[in-house]
Length: 259
Length: 262
Ligand SMILES: Nc1ncnc2c1ncn2[C@@H]1O[C@H](COP(=O)(O)OP(=O)(O)O)[C@@H](O)[C@H]1O
Ligand SMILES: [Mg+2]
Image 1 (tube, rainbow over the protein chains, first blue to last red):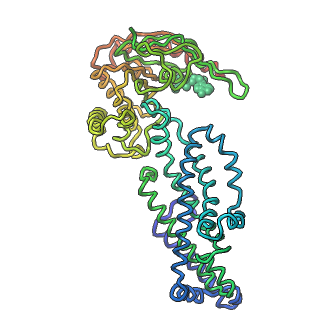
Image 2 (image 1 turned 135 degrees about the vertical axis):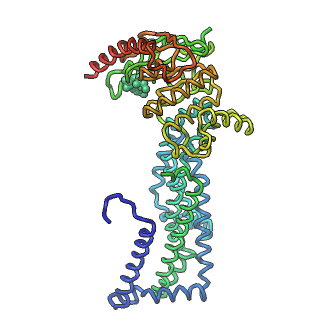
């Protein structure tokens, strides 16, 4: 059972994964229903589930969820559309890298959330500001990671392509890009996960809708059940989008997953 | 006029971190005629790959120049097909797509690409594996695909850098016969690097022996064995005579190379 690096069967893997959720729920139920933590601080699982149903039936929470998803996806797509090509150019051409790299390395440490007050000044509290937070949070990360991936391409494949007649554009588009594509997709999957944390931060301040806004509202009412349910929904959507991304990658890049 | 002329080509690599520069290749001259199959035999580290990479245009000589059909070589190009010792198939392309890579770069129409690919898939015996990815192939199959990929471009000269070096003996012998068969049929011009004496004799009409580092051509031996060649030739007395001679030549170099290292 504890043989280093020995694979586990798929059935066992699923069972173990579910087991942890059960243990977690049991622990949560234990400390809340058992009275160890007062309900004011932490709602019990049943209360949280009930709050969840109310949220959807009485408070139109589905709308909030939809708004949040669209903000995340919108900001993430805009960031990726510009960041991926720039990252590829930086990875492929060392002079482009030398030009952008120092600034982008600096910019990526600027915390996206710290821009929120400034962005509110510039763009108000509308959708533009929410998208901007996500774009700032994702763009620089994607650029740098894509540049590193492309920069690490196999030089022997580039040389082989040259002896087959590939020129600059052919090398970038038909050697570097397809070779790096699966890892770029993995990077995007990772950054999409981070985008979820940025959107919630953006929605905690100056928002009229969205999951983050709902959580803020619930805090005012000291409704920990709703708060927990909101957090749970974020985790659930993250899990689903991650799963979809993984499936898409396995389908798009079958060669990468051959053992 | 010679197909390929190597004129006074040498290569010195700058020293690593202030160390001594490496003289990888002493000034080397060589004329390759049309349809020549030349094998270059030498101990490891004597500059065989360096020479081939310079001919391919992947590396620049410190002195001298390489002329292909009278034109100076400046950069890599599809007129010089290369097969590397390491596996360099594009892992995201199938066997067929790998073979078509050069044709696609030349914008050859799809239908013609398919015909050419079919021809070479048959020739290297990969029928039934066209849609496999490189990771799904054995080493021998990967090198056959690499060979087909280079041949599909119809290069003026083929440069092969120990293409069968990583293969087991049986597979290697089969690959030798396969390549020789292709050469006998298509009359390509070939420069073939190896450190295997049998392989050097069996494939070649000329064997060049290189000295230990810094490498230069030590002798140039014509191999007058009839074609088509069959593997049984490797046990003939004529073959044995060539082998005895080359073994002696290469032994001296191997000893020198070992002494230089210790
Ligand atoms: N890029 C390089 N930088 C420095 N030294 C190199 C480089 N490439 C090859 N060499 C050196 O040149 C010599 C000849 O190498 P190589 O042509 O690969 O030999 P061979 O193919 O005959 O085994 C070796 O000593 C090697 O260490
Ligand atoms: Mg070599």
